Image 1 (cartoon, rainbow, N blue to C red):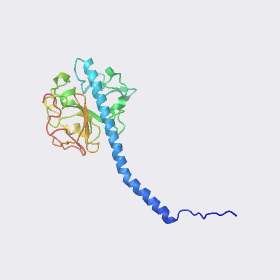
Image 2 (tube, rainbow, N blue to C red):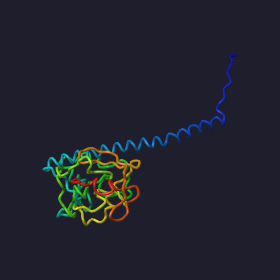
Image 3 (cartoon, rainbow, N blue to C red):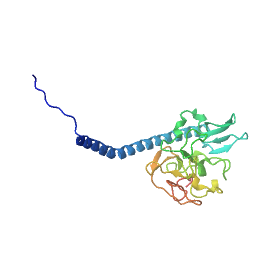
Image 4 (cartoon, rainbow, N blue to C red):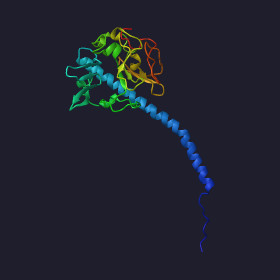
Length: 247
């Protein structure tokens, strides 16, 4: 009869050792995978902001060099904003592409969704959110001290003036970027901590500047003229310099 080699399976001890090694490898790799995933989201966010700035440039070219107004309410109650316009259709609020987008065709509006933003109170009328627009100095709005937006040529140092960024405040999404202290454009605005930036990309916030470039910023300032800022949020400068196009 042919010889047969004796065979046997893994012992319980051997199985436990293998399971322990796998668990150790997973524990080592998970933080690295988490970091890589968030870095990928941050890169996607920067790409979104660059596309928003590009759309703004197209808008300015089509509107005699003027930036879009941040917001206003029409006579029929329709709320017009830089990102989405909200109208009542069939008794329900319905969002359509906002003031920035009709000139560009309004396509690909998902660029307005920061991949790292999680809305603490979902269910709003806007399908995408996560970014804000420099309202204090550039976009202004109907109920601001200066209602009309500025022209691109008024920005003296476009590479250092924030135009859009990761928006968030203590209660949720933030579409209107505010400077930490009052300025000529919003002298009477008293909720400045509602216009902060979110440092959600591993303690960085992404910012798009008037010259078209976008970058991650780690400097976070919490000094403001009114109530304290929310956790993980802040301003881009200790004063208004990061927002002021004439500074």
